[in-house]
Structures are given as C-alpha cells and as structure tokens.
Length: 395
Ligand code: CAA
Image 1: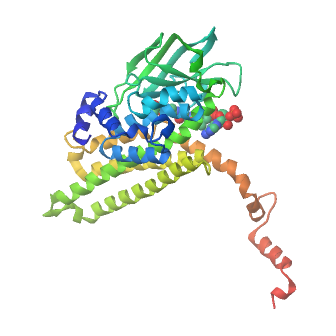
Image 2: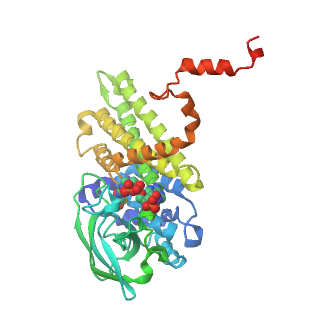
Image 3: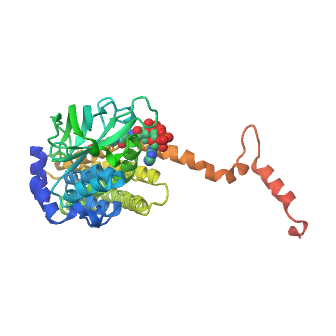
C-alpha cells in the first residue's frame, strides 16, 4: 500500500489492486459474524485494521471502513434473508457497500432529508438524491435512507437496500477532493427508481433514523481509528526524519524544540488510542453510553490527528510542504475526519446532550451545591454536618 499511496492520491482513482490485496488477506470479514462468512469480530477488530491501514494511507483506511458503515444497518436491523444475501459477499470483499444518508439540504441535520420512497404495488419507488456517498460508484450495494411517512414525526424515515444497476439509480458527479483521494465520493440520483418490496431494511418502515444513528454510534470509532492511524503514521515519519535531518551540525532530533513537538505528538496519539479502544470495546460489549463514547473518540482523535499531522509537516520544514514528500498527504487526509460521519461540532453537541441527560444520576450532589435561590454555602454545610454529628464524636 505504501508505495502505491502517492500514485492513487495523484490519480484520484479507486485502487482495485489494494482492494484485491485486502480481500486476499480476508480483512473485509473482520466485523461480520462467522455465520455470514466473516471472522466474527466487532468494532474493536474493525478499528485495529483501520488504524493499521491508515498509518500508511488514510484514503485506504476509509475505503475499508466505509464498508462497515454501509453494512452496519443490515447487521443491526436486516432480516435473516437480507443478512444472508448481502453480508457474505461483503465479508469476502467481492462486493463493496456504501451508506447514503447525507443530502444537499440535509448534512448535519440528517433528519431533514427529503429523498422519498413510496410503495407502488410490490415495489418501492425512490426519488431524490444523496450527497457525499463515499465508495459510491465502486460499491455494489447501498444502504439508503428515505422519507416513507412524511406526516409522521418520529417514524418519517426508513432504510432501503439499493443495488448497482437498479432501474432509475444513477451515480452522479464525483467530487474532486483535498484528501482521501483514492476513494470516490459521489452523488447518487434516484429517478423513479423501482426496487422490490423486500429491500426495506428489516421489513419494517419508520425505523430508519434510529438505525442510522445506531449505525453512526458503531462507525464513529472507525473514523477515530482512521485519524489515530494517520496521526501515528505521521508521527513515525516525523520521528525518523528528525533523526536523519541535520542542521547546525547535528540531527534536528537533538534540539529540544523538536523533542517537545515529538513528545506532545506521541502523548496525544497514545491518549487517542486509549479512547478509541475504550469506545470500541464498549460498542462490542454493549455496555456504557456508547453514543457518548463513540462521539468522544471521534471528536478527540480527529482533532488530535489534525494537530499531529500539522506538527509533523512542521518537523519536515519546507520539504514537508511539498508533494514530493509523503507527509503533507497525512494533513490533507486528516482534515475530512473532522467533518464526515458528523462534524466535530455535532460530536460536541452529542456529548453535551448525553452529559446533561446523565446529570440526573448525579442528583445526590445537588445538596452540596449552593444555588442563588437556595443558598447552601460550604459554611452552611459544615454547620449542618456538625449539628448532625453524635455528641460523642467531638470527645
Ligand atoms: N441511537 C438510537 N436512537 C437515537 C440516537 C442514537 N444514537 N440518537 C438519536 N436517536 C433517536 C432519538 O431517540 C429520537 O427518537 P424518538 O423520535 O423516538 O424520540 C430520534 O432519534 C431523533 O433524535 P434527536 O431528536 O436527537 O435528533 P436531532 O435531529 O435533534 O439530532 C443528530 C440528531 C445527532 C444531530 C443527528 O442528526 C446527527 O448525528 N447528525 C450528523 C449526521 C451525520 O453524522 N452524518 C454523516 C453521514 S455519513 C458520512 O459522513 C458519509 C460517509 O460516507 C463517510
């Protein structure tokens, strides 16, 4: 992958030879249960592979991870027949999958999507367009979210499974991107696209938004792992460069200012790693507030990767700014991780909402917090504690 990474970055083409190598190494099956041809791992296994790939190429990291994003809805909510049909070829890397949620009018406000579907006899008819579909065009299968009940408040949206070649389904414009250039990001257009009735995810309408959110809870640690790998990869290159590059008659790694940069980068990378692994383990075990942990891991690691890859370019100096050197690509690849699968502003909102929701569990602290209309100062609390204490306590 490493020697091919610059070529595909320049060409902005899907690296089928890398897909073949990943399939041959049986990596596409890590998050898919054994009964559907996978290795039976989970989010943790996914993150370990994504981290490792992203050390060499952030584009390949997402090219791989996006298949988990696309297949999680089927894994979480698909019928047995849907799982049996779609998961085995994905586990083998024979088929690729994409996730269609975002639209021109609905990015951060995912619930505001307008692509719609209605039943016509025994077929769903889909109309609308998706934006930012990563893997689009290369993918054979698409998990697509559409409005099926416009009048409902909480059951407006359903998930449908679309296939390349479905009548009325066209791949539109491919984006010209700053980073992750080896993986296509396209628009998808649905013009009276007719699909069989049994392509409704889980056979139940109205649960699409919930399933999209549950999917993102499990996929965001994967973005965090991509960012983590990018940061580790950039740190490794910067460290080696610093030991080789000589100025003022010595390796620049002997200068304390470079050492400080490297030490801070390494500390942030390690902190990010622990948070990603904690979030991934929580997802797999189904314990804790996985929504909050997944958002925290995505938020921290992607901001961290932007800092670390920028500092890595700094260590390389003027050379680092040039396309001829491998480091600037890390910075370009890192930027999108702060934006996709929920901007970091949305992650902060998700974390804060969950913190505030959990504050109810901390109500035993209320008695100790002075409020303007119920003053209960520390001195009041001490007096109350002394009055409550048994008389013998003082003696
Ligand atoms: N798990 C399960 N259910 C959830 C949930 C979760 N994590 N989060 C919300 N829900 C449910 C709520 O319980 C609620 O259900 P009810 O109606 O039954 O009460 C419903 O979903 C609506 O929830 P909210 O009121 O919280 O929804 P909201 O509209 O206020 O905000 C949001 C939700 C968190 C902002 C959400 O819109 C969001 O995550 N936005 C970012 C979208 C995003 O990440 N897009 C990335 C797409 S993928 C991509 O980037 C492309 C790619 O290919 C890589």
